[in-house]
Length: 160
Image (tube, rainbow, N blue to C red; front, side, top):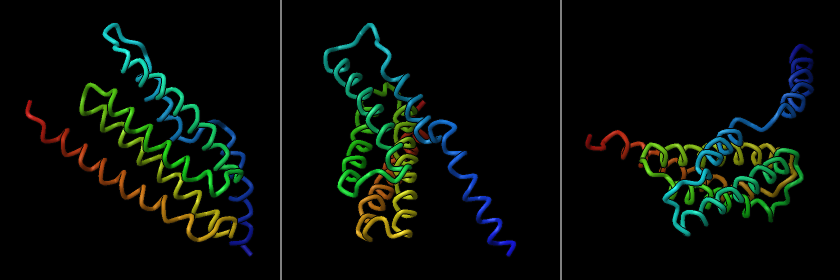
């Protein structure tokens, strides 16, 4: 009986905690995006385009993440979210003048993808999504983990 009551209390409190604002993963993405999209005096057309693209990707991922968390994202849209996350990290890394900033973008990608994986896995357990839906998020988590590890090694083994 105690386990059932605890499960009900935890489940009842979860949506309320979710509505307090964006998830930590999305908040980190927004902070990094806000810093990276500030105009610089030496901006080329390519950099300006990438800053605009990054701002659009941040906005898109933020909205799509809300839909994913609310259970409104269709399985066909999940692949678009994963692709947008990869594009976000690629553009963020391209705009990063320092290896440490690139490392932060790889971490943002890893955190976002882990969140997407957890949400898809929970929807899979409730049979809202087909079992194949977990293959691509799992592969992307492994990709970002590898990229983050490589970026971390570049930062730690950089000549001073």
